[in-house]
Structure formats: structure tokens, C-alpha cells
Length: 155
Image (tube, rainbow, N blue to C red; front, side, top):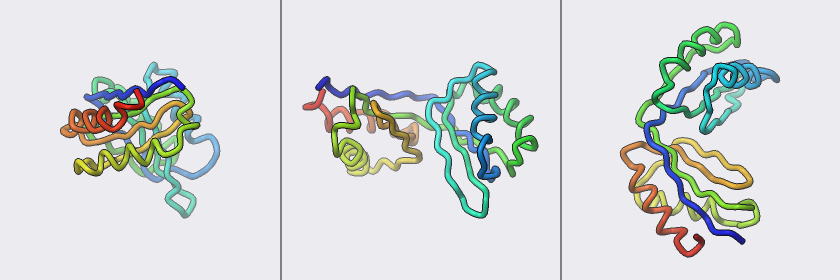
């Protein structure tokens, strides 16, 4: 099985669309519009907050923040959201590998190696080939080092 690769990306921002109706089509409209405007979403998480409402958070490049917020501001009322918030100082760190889903324990090892260094995880996204975490940008280098050391034998 091919090896694992650690990656990191700094200069990121988390954007949260708060309290949207928890119904089909909201994410399609939001991410469809952002994609049509040329924005690439690096990581996304939706949380069902209960009572028929949900929060949608996603990570973009910091350089795109102003333009993304302009698009989002036009969409708040349209989507029935309560508010938009953003958080700067975010980095992404991740482990990538072919058929990662066939390697039990990768996520646990990743989270454990970050926690040992006091690195808090803000968001988590997984796929068949990667596990990616949003962390405080000040901890990006430390997080990358932790993951490189943890997965050195798997590379």
C-alpha cells in the first residue's frame, strides 16, 4: 500500500453561516453559488443544531475572504440564515494516502499526536484518501512536525 503524506496550509479563514434551515438544498445553493463565483472550499462541516436549524462552516484562503463575504452577505436572507461569522488565524494540517479508509486507526493516531503537543482541533474532515484538521495557525508548524513524526514509518 502506498505511503502517507503530511500536508499543511496556512493563511486560511473559517467562515460560519449560522442557524440556516436544516433542509435539503441549503448546502447545494451555498456551495453552488460559491463555486460559480470561482471560490474553492478547502474544508467544510455542517452541524445539525436541532430545532430544524444547522450551522455550516467552511475554510477558504485568507486572500478570498472579502470577496466570499460579499457573496455570503447577499445570501443570508435568501437562505434564511441568522448570521455570518469568520475566524482568521486558521491552518489546515492533514494526512493523505491512497485507500486511507482501509487503514484503521489513522485518525486516532493523528488526533493523539496533536493532543500530546497541546494542539486543539477546531474542525475535522475525512475522505477516502485524507484526514484534515483545522488548527490555530500559530500551531501549524508544530502540528505538521507532530504528524510527520507520527507517520514517518508509514511514508
